[in-house]
Image 1 (tube, rainbow, N blue to C red):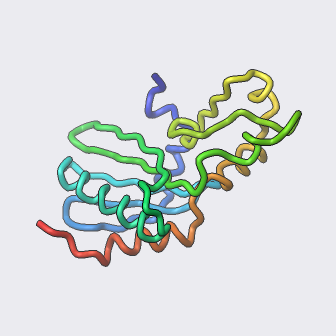
Image 2 (cartoon, rainbow, N blue to C red; image 1 turned 90 degrees about the vertical axis):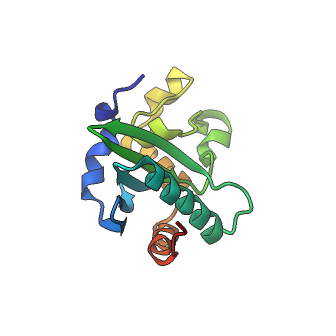
Length: 162
């Protein structure tokens, strides 16, 4: 288990623009360090769940996907407050995963990887990673900023059913 407060990317989350969906849920969304992220916070688990499902539905609509949208999620509960962090994805794996020979890097970013702790099954792949390579992997698998904007804008436009 990796302690939540040791994930490197989480320091960037305070720099994201905040929008409020309703009285109980705040959303921060944007692009930072080569990846797009949506953070939802609330002390009301039911409201958070409702808006997270709306986020997934909006992503499905914007991305014209009949399937469940690609997303990595982790959640934290502390001091009576839930924080749900979602990395919406355009690809499951980077091209480097499928490359031939020495260009191949076995990395398939999950939630922890997207939060800044890169995990590779082969030590050689880990040793060959540098900052530029990691940023490029994040950019390649992350949703683009324009699509993220459309998704988050739809959260504030869609009426919620009680």
